[in-house]
Length: 200
Image 1 (cartoon, rainbow, N blue to C red):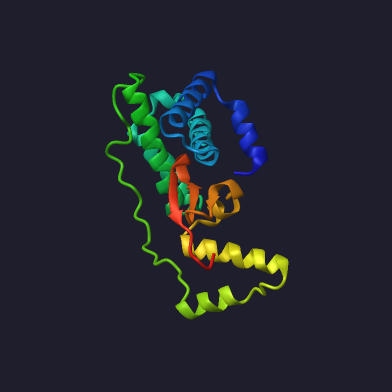
Image 2 (tube, rainbow, N blue to C red):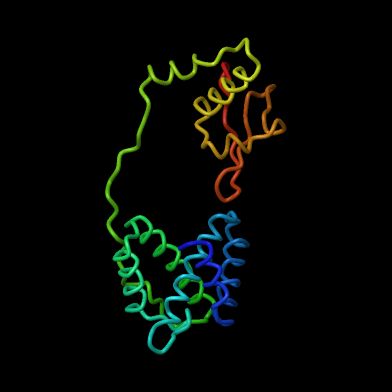
């Protein structure tokens, strides 16, 4: 959905749907400390579902949804060309949303209970050979300051097993050279200490 279409969807949200989406996204932030991207993905999917429901006979709200409504919405997405992984992610978010509503006493039955997740194709992760890694790490010239920085980044990325997002958000204060560790704040604001390799 384009940004223009998404903003139109937000404008058309009915107040009860808007209120329950806000309650839910606030709750997942408070309970699990989920990041902005995850909460925005939940919100975006719920807004899309709410807009679709508004076009259906009877115009049900998010709190009126039945299992058949969700199956029809997911099927429509797959027919429109969404990947199976997108459908699975959306269903995962919906399960969390409706379990939250059930727990809060907003609904009496979870409409996602008997919906199976779409089968995802099994993929093996791409990996570099040891020779590829050696070639990559030996490429920067440590005599050139900017390349020395690049080499340090690659050594930390490889040696500490960081995600790229964790590496680029790393600050000097989170590196303890005396103890040889790096403090990483990862997904869900969870912290971990990772040994820093000698070369890094």
